[in-house]
Amino acid sequence: MKKTIYILVEKAFTNNWFNVTHKLNISTSDLVELLQVATKSQLFQFDGRLYEQVVANALLCSTEEQLVQENKLTSFYKRYVDDKTSSVSDI
Image (cartoon, rainbow, N blue to C red):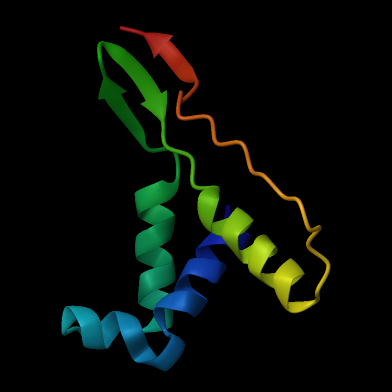
């Protein structure tokens, strides 16, 4: 999770995109802290079930971008995305 947060922050501050787009003046350390609070052990309820928030897509995208830059991504590539979040418990 920590690596994913730093990937998001790096992307957010490329050309100061985050602050310019949202008319803010937030530091990288503040954004790291906000993302840690927002993504660590966060639960949400949907359709009567309790789920735990998982942030993984940013890490996968970053890995894919790195493989493309290094010309190491295979000519045939697919990524399976399971839209069904694992249930923590039934309510």
